[in-house]
Image (cartoon, rainbow, N blue to C red; front, top):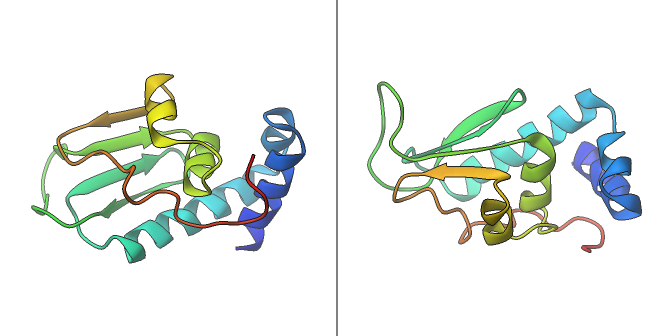
Length: 122
């Protein structure tokens, strides 16, 4: 949570330059923390959420995927994921500008985001 707070402070003080200047290990810690929160708050294995290189998680109820490429995949970069997870970016906006690639009928995360409210939102 401390890593996420540090990222949020940088984001709120002058996106994108300030947030991109946050230490890489801190950003990865914040991403992993929020991915874990997604898995806890929306348990299941029907959607794979990928935030390379920080991590990936399977979440959301529905048919379980076990082999090969999952039918429902969400992929984005670390900064976009953190903005989505904290409500600093809206799902539809991120998808529309191509910052999120979502494939599959269950790959819409708008109903489960934001995950965490931290600091002020812009």
